[in-house]
Image 1 (tube, chains in turn brown, red):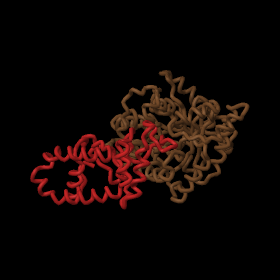
Image 2 (cartoon, rainbow over the protein chains, first blue to last red):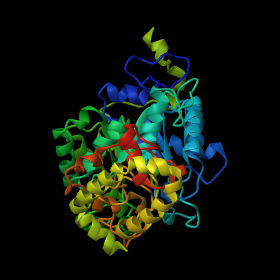
Image 3 (cartoon, each protein chain N blue to C red):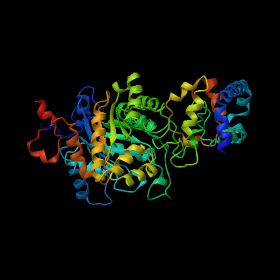
Image 4 (cartoon, rainbow over the protein chains, first blue to last red):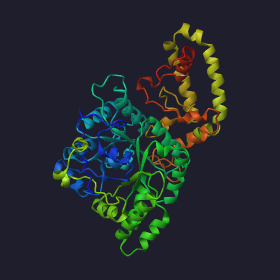
Length: 340
Length: 154
């Protein structure tokens, strides 16, 4: 079964009742399908072909593509541009917005711009500190934090005005996302934080890498006890580790990443560490799939993007479904055509 | 001055009670303040406030004080200026991603808020800072909003 729902977010097309966006990512989640998203690392390039090449490795295995916004505080092509390029050829994209580099004036402008280019999903992030990246001498802006950013974009969408109160003629139709990290302290505060983000406007969540299934289960227990999973779609972050050394480096240098010792031991004992890393990721996805209240997985395979297709395929989470990609463009109808 | 700051968080309940009485005292002086003119006395008050809150909380004088909602911990000490909870970068030892030697401001805020009766206020959504209010007295702002029943600047 090939999904025939290309992301065709024509602004004038009316939204389905109860929907915030015209995108098929929201559609899929509301239909109760287990969704797969993947992270695209924007190129250090001004050539659009580099963007399309990076997206095409996910073809047929991913429902929506996240374009990072200066991830790790490193300079790359902007998220709004990557998403805009990809929506032009029909991909479903998730525009990441970080508060590190821009103030509220710039961010609200980008949200309108992204929405006008057909971007249907936005992920509101605080962003890593500048010390983590290639420009540690830069000014950290942090005019907003992820939660206040959420409430501002929600206000733009639902009330049709900027934070200043000035009216927006045609508000952005966007599905709002936020991040969560169940794997960093304070553990008992993390579900509370999730509730706060939902109250601020979060409709979907993408988490930090999960390498510790027990911590995730503890978090989800509290989430379910409070009914939070009924108000938000939770996608759990996963990714393949390239080697024991890479895992050591990551947990030391990438903010917020927690990798238990036994994962690193398992990797170092393996003959083919890369293969073992993929195997761990597949097992993680399958265990995540079994937990109640989880709506999908978010694959972050930095510098190993070509392995995402294999990982998703072997995990079996798509259950025979083939997400839309430009290769199926010719035999595809738009959403409204299907409805007729 | 992490030491004093952490002492204040540990004594959040006492400081909260003290502030409540202090605010009531200031509020009773409202007619006097109004005669003198709030704008005129703001300079004096903001200097005192900076010294006191600077010593106790390493206050950054953002002018939109949240101490009562954040367990007597100033969230503006967070290098990312997080006002609605910790970021995802907190280290496994509970320290800051940006300043590894500093305990996460929000771990402190959470522990402080659990000691005070109004700790539930940590759930309040904090609006982004109004940068025009930086270095002005939030004590006086609290008095005026209490008297008028509407919030001033927040």
